[in-house]
Image (tube, rainbow, N blue to C red; front, side, top):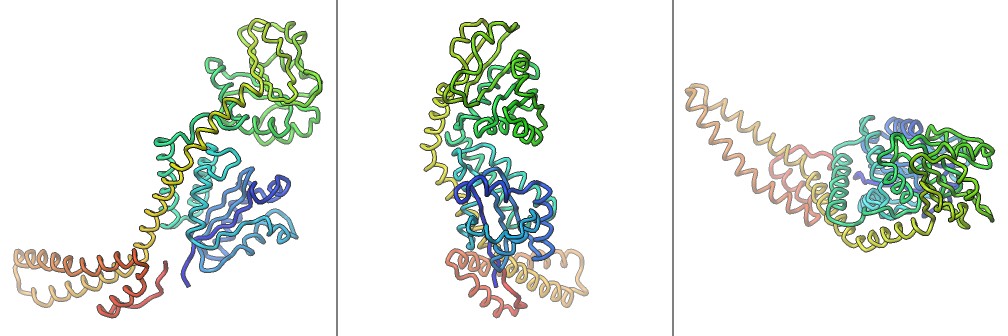
Length: 422
């Protein structure tokens, strides 16, 4: 039975966030599950990708191991009824579908924000985790490097990664541009609803920033702050935190503005204070812009930039899909040729063995120059003899007739017949 590259995927397209949070795997869990896959099923190729939007397992095996893998996830996460979650997993049981899905995920075509730049780094880390455990064989190595090369092409040849296409990431780009000359800018994030949480997660792109988080419900702020090593401020102390910060990102829900001109005009602003209001209705009074040193951006300003970038990315999708298609075709050509490699090597070894035996039999009394000449001539002859069957084998790959050609050549040259692995 031939090996197939397969995948199972639980993502924002198949499961709500409350399900994704339950199934999500941290680095330790990924490490343990990979080891179990190696131990229980002798997998040589396996990759686990787990982000806020998806948990996916890719692997090569003769059998569909989807149910067994879901059980392993349940065992690792302490979910006894894990099979009740099976409906949220999409199964890719064939090579072509699984490979194409991994390409599309890696390029950001399947992301919530099209072209999301985070996903390529997340895929690289997943691949590194597999490689560290020696669970990336020639197939997965070649596949991943083909993906990485395609990603470079997309960056260089298309506008698919241009600009910030999400509201939260556009806010991060804005902060970066305005604080570029500020050493370790102090950032206060007020509110950790959906948008606020996204801003917190995207702060990884500003590693030098000193981040504080505040929220009406402190436990929610503590939860996400702990994930990223940020400081939590009591909501009652928010005004003091605003006074101390260079950047204030507000995404709280209130009927009336939370940050007012009266509040800010009493502060001593040494150089600038950037306010980013991501709330609807707005939580920052627009009149604060009248105060010297205050810079205010609201959700409409930022959404406009994000929408323009998203439009450019959507327009670039056909170019991205063409690059992916070309890369997959090239990879499948390599994969087919890998099928016949063992037979080619056997044929070379068999002919070389015959050549060596004949040289030893006939050149016992020959001089050094004669041996050198005959050795060179017989090597050249062997290469020419090999050329025709090798060409025929590779041609058979393109016609999906490799197995028949392998059997034929094995019979003609009396090669040892073994299990052919695709």
